[in-house]
Image (tube, rainbow over all chains, first blue to last red; front, side, top):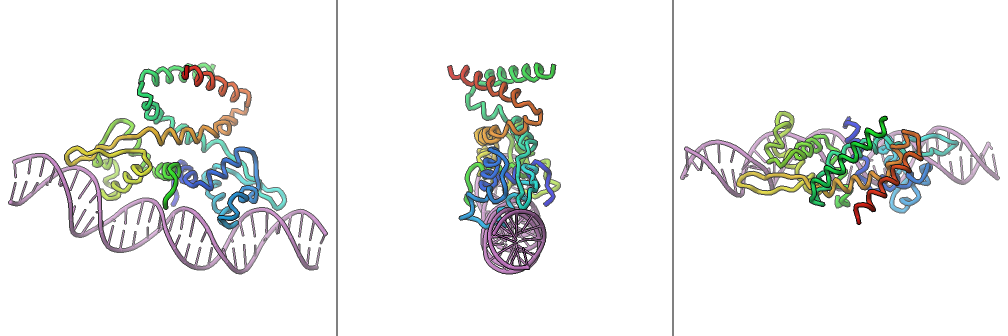
Length: 119
Length: 119
DNA sequence: TTTATAGTTAACTATATAGTTAATTAACCA
DNA sequence: TGGTTAATTAACTATATAGTTAACTATAAA
C-alpha cells in the first residue's frame, strides 16, 4: 500500500497475536519458534513468519541470524513515535478527572523536568 | 471481524486521514462537513462517513445531532488505553539514551507523583 | 550422507478495507 | 410546497490482510 511509517506501526499493533509477540520480546530476545510456541495450536508456521514480517516492516523488531535460528529483538523508536503521538491527546483523557488546572499543573512540572534535564 | 477494543483502536489510528480528523477534533467539536473540508478534493462524502464510523466504533469520537448537522467530538478513554499500553515499552525507547539508571530514576519520580496524588 | 530442525517462499482462498457513484433521508428556508 | 444543505445507505470494485497447504533452503547432528 506504501503507507507512512506511523500508519504502518499502528497497523502492526492492531493485531492481538502481534501485540502478544511484542510482550514476549519485551522480556528478552527470542527465536521465531519460541515466539510461535503460544500460537502453535491456532496458527501455522508461515502465519507466524508473516506476522513477524509485519512487525519488522513497521520497525518494531529486527531479526538476526544465529545458526538456523533468527533471534528477534524489540526496537524502541517506533514505540516512542506512538507515545509522542498519543501525548498530544493527553488532556482529553485527563479531562475525565474534570480538572483542567490539575492538567496545567502537570504540564508545568513536565516542562520543568525537561529543562532540568537539558542543562 | 469482531476484534477487541484495543485492536479496533489501533486499526482506526492506522490511517492518516483519520488521524488528521482527530487532530482537527482536538481543536474543538466539528460537523461532518467541516471535518471533510480538507479532503473534499481527494475523497467523496461517503468515504468521509465511513472513516468517521471507524473512529466511532473504536470509541475515539462520538456524534451528536443538531438540526441537519452531526457535531463530532473526541473521547479521551481510548487514547488513555493506547498511552497505557505503550508505556509498558518505555524503557525500550529510553534505552537509546543508554542509561538504565536514568530510567530507574524517572520511574521513582513517577511513583512518588502517583502516590502523592492519591493522598 | 542422511535425517532432523528452523524458518521461508509460493500459490491459493476468504474476508476486510477503502474507495466509488447513485439514490435516499432529514431538516431548514424561501 | 419545492429547493437546498447535510449526511447516510446501497451496491459495487479493487486491493490488502490473514490465513491455509505444499514445497523449499539452510544449518546441525547422527
